[in-house]
Image (cartoon, rainbow, N blue to C red):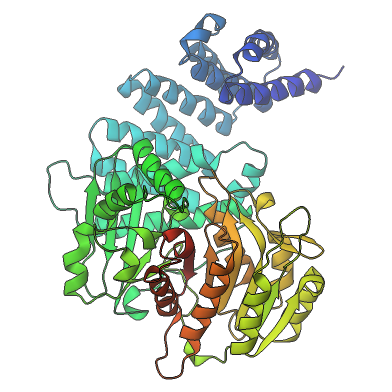
Length: 583
């Protein structure tokens, strides 16, 4: 038996322990911990980087378990002593990275004990060692840890500097972290996302109730946009987006951008109005309570027989919009562009309610992952040549979509169109059409789902599901500068129920198709209301006497539904959202 085999077994067991603790499977934890303790003790006689990392990882798990009183009797290992020993052995081996890992984790141990002075000393030493070894993955962790320690001591300015350095380190190693994440060593939600959010929280704090500086507001806005970009890159498991922010003044002088930001203890909103200083307002509400309110709206708005959505729709309006109403009116704002954060992506902003009117009754509305758009160009400058694909018949156990035929026929009647219906709508046929002709508008009416998991995000074609990677292959021949898809419409698709970040799949679908704008549905209406909405949208978009841009045409369609008897409930009109360039 080679010496590496027992160590490999220990590493596997440590990964198992990590998962068992996360899933609270305490019986299995009880069984596994003593085995690992024995294995770790054996590594002391043959120290190596792998054995030292195993020791540190075990100490980290012991620290996690020590927070669970029911399991404290398991722990005969002192993490402080184990980490100190790992550091000493790393020093003997002249292994700078292992030294940094052991010292930084020791700093984290003292952080948990609220021994701030000790924790700061060890963290600073670990940070210095990580800088000497040029290991950005360690460096960002210790910069983040130091930022937390400084914030805990009320040293806000120093904490912001440390957090900013951590974010810069994360930005510099995007591709490395994506590769690491595939091995599940780093959880984006636990190890990366909090760095951005905690920095934003610090930037938007005012200890003395002073006005937040424009410098801090600008940096907070930039940080939340960087988080959105990092989130999409993590979703794709590749660095697929490398764009530059666009000045809202250069896009649309009558559009304001609203950034709702979910923080642990409050909701922050940053408002961007062309030609004006940034503005911000805040609501003290715990994250869990805010998410419950958003989920309440998401669930109640789809119940056609009830009007229970008014209460959450009004509260969310009060938090997001009411503080900005005067500024929006003074600056003659006509379009609101939301950069939705987290679960805000899963609700239709159109249904927010001021007590008398829905938000869509006052403004054009659009969503964007950030002001990182391709060069905007109004759709009215283009000939609306359309590729329309759809399914009407049942496939793979999905119900038939009876009104898709009507939807497609209306498109044919109004626009210069190529149609792929039912058996003609295959992956290969779609790819052939995309490659052979330039279609500014691509309309796909079929079952589909947007999910936080790539493998659960798909469109249904006649010959099977089209995954995101397959969609990328289908659309890869598009020239983003000359022949980009200006508008991708996904009809009858929906976000996965109960999936907090399902709308990432929607953004992913748009990115893989190379679309400047996407109109999609948060839930599937699955009846003639969808066909009528789509037909009305194209009528608004193509009328010669009063040309409209995409968001104006969508708003007018929704207004007609609101003022109708049959379809005035938000279930029918609210799920339609526009993502991307709204012109």
